[in-house]
Length: 193
Ligand code: SF4
Ligand code: SF4
Image 1 (cartoon, rainbow, N blue to C red):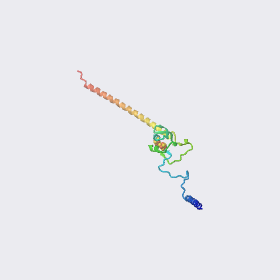
Image 2 (cartoon, protein in one colour):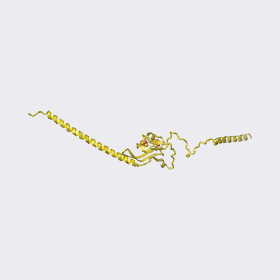
Image 3 (cartoon, rainbow, N blue to C red):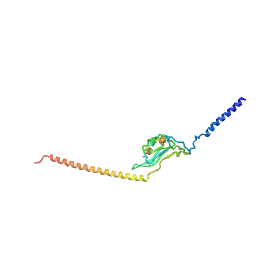
Image 4 (cartoon, helix red, strand yellow):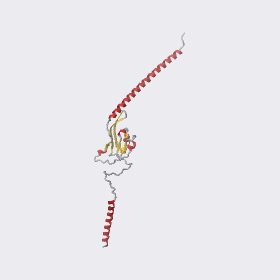
């Protein structure tokens, strides 16, 4: 009989204990976040998806060379006037480990890492992200190329003219020296009786 009441007491006590925890949390502020509608603040040191300022990129390929998993790929063509014709600048997020080495290496500071972390995709091929905002040459690039070509041509002509003038000066200098030498020999020769 004593055991019966003991079990009854234990059952009521444990139920009340459990309910007290439930009731306490029922009135406290929830800690769950309704993602993606709500998001927790992200640490300043967090490294997420890349961002490229394409106009400032000099196509030095340093970021691609330093990447330990070789997940940056780029394709471009250089033109006069330091114009870069872009064809491809991709990061493969199937391999990227978000180490940030590419960002640290960039000499022009045009490659950044944002706080974007939601990169999940149903198809792996979508993890290959192209960061180009434009491809090929823009109208202003054609102008820059033409200007650079004209300047190079002018420089070449100027150099050729300078070389020609230098050569002419050298020749006249030789003539003068030869005349001087001949006169000297004439003076030194014994007079005929
Ligand atoms: S963060 Fe690291 S792994 Fe990712 S692209 Fe940059 S260098 Fe490569
Ligand atoms: S290191 Fe910077 S400047 Fe060089 S190719 Fe990469 S993003 Fe462009």
